Length: 426
Image (cartoon, rainbow, N blue to C red; front, side, top):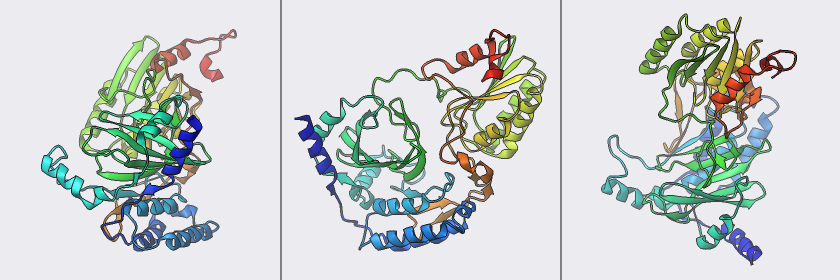
């Protein structure tokens, strides 16, 4: 009976309900824009020369695949296919969703009604199938499998495989006025690296994104933040209520320094300077834990004083740099600039994977319709290209189910039979 249900699920999923595009989306024009616009970003250097033929052929194939009007989501997926040939997590394509005026929100009944009657909402992709049957199939899927149910506050998503390496996330049940059962919220493609390329909608419908560095482990997706039910407590992610900037002396041998952002925003820079002033002359233990978890990056001028601080400390003391999947961009660049020092170890989990390019000026390139855009990267750190999309690996991977600070403290205290520190052995 179970086999029959699974076959039925696959059959129905392969026959999506395609809602006709009620807004003209000249996808050939949009794709042509992207084809030319991508040539202006720093990372296009990966395509020049030997890869140009592949880029041109894919563009031609995608153009040929467009027949008549297509929905914006369908067009966005084609744009994402083309941009995927370039490894640059800072220049990923974005699709505008439902526009909301500043100061307004979808809690406003009038605005909510406008969303639900909008062309955007009506053309969102849906599946035509028995959702109860799908739920029955997905419910027993084990934690370590991608397929399964992912409960959210007011709805449940089901991720189901549609082909060899393709999955979709479908709204199974919903008490939300923003999402209806049967709607497709995301498309997941597993890459040879094991990571996923994901095209997905924000739950607020503000934007659709495509990322190529999504990671699934222990029942969780990190970027889309989907997770299965009844997971154990994990210690890799810092609570959002934790201070972004903090210092404390843990014990007589170990100092702890938390740097949660390298943003160049005025308030952030002020707090960063306060933290540097606070620790001046105090870092005199044998070990320093430098916590870059959840640090999504920022400006080099904000990170450089900390690099200088770490290099100075590492001349005599040992530094443990804590990283997780949300350590990105300038945080990754900082870790890479320090990792080869004799007294520095990277610990935790491999990082986000966006360290090769960046944007100094925040320039964006917008398509003719205004529906699609991407950041124009102007920073080039392509010596880090091997880490783009896959992240910076750590020297010591920490156990997810045990407090990470406690694990590092044990490492600082370890000695082997030769009385040599565990640090040197890591």
